[in-house]
Length: 374
Ligand SMILES: Nc1ncnc2c1ncn2[C@@H]1O[C@H](COP(=O)(O)OP(=O)(O)O)[C@@H](O)[C@H]1O
Ligand SMILES: [Mg+2]
Image (tube, rainbow, N blue to C red):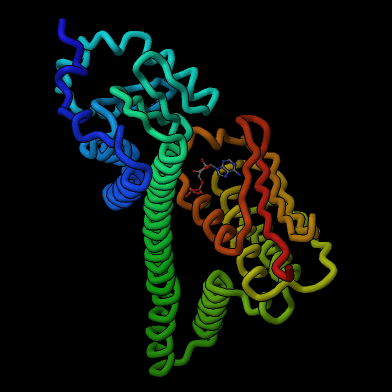
């Protein structure tokens, strides 16, 4: 069998061994320059390793080699230099390579093994280079540094892309929720207030022709109902009490309304040394509103509580109920638009949301906002 070294490019003839120090240094710098250029455009770790391998072989520093990359706990060949993939599988030099590579990755130290030079270039990434010329340690270190930086950049790139995707999904969910809310308000206005006012108008017409005191009493009731509806819708949109009297008063008002409308007993306790700023109050109010609405809609609870306290330099809001509970981890993204909206609002101010619930155990929603003064 022919070892694949023999199939590699005639690299050794033009290799840097035997050349003068200054000339070698120049070649090293040229190689590093080329290497930096070639890996710069890569956005995937595999691409970076492939380019690095190819550059080192093309420029005659090694005859052939292989890049290994840990993926899902397994060390796999990410790229092969100089040989066709079919030949590589049969290459006698590869025997034990993966085990050796694993060991070198653990130690993190450039190691010679037989004809290989095993060069760890980052967490879970390694270049195995063969047909070694007399390559200086400082050159290898510089190569490692370059490849490492390029790999780090690809990881940042991936994280950024993922974050971006997450953001746009959330934004879409928020926009959808906003549209839905507008639809609901529009229906409320049309169906309830619109109807009351139409009936009122017809009744007034009737009474203009032949006034009827008992009819007028009914019409007055109708006007009162329409007024209540308008107040409720306005309150849902943004309670003026939140701006005027602050979070505690607004929460008490919402709690009282919830009790009146749905018979759910809601206890409110707010112990804050001073008023929060407008954004914080709005976020906490909306989160409490959504959490209490969930209690009404899903929990079949007899009582709930809303507690706001100063905690670890920030603020904590806890909404608890004694209802049927649920398994938060079992919800798909589409089933938790409300919860996602709460989380998004909090995260916009650097805060976070945590749910504690299990079937039969009631539910607790923990919302945290950090201190904004620091
Ligand atoms: N307090 C609660 N008690 C029981 N189940 C709840 C409670 N809060 C949320 N859930 C469950 O979590 C799901 C997601 O809530 P949410 O994102 O607000 O969506 P929605 O209220 O529109 O269904 C609800 O459909 C419900 O199954
Ligand atoms: Mg909800």
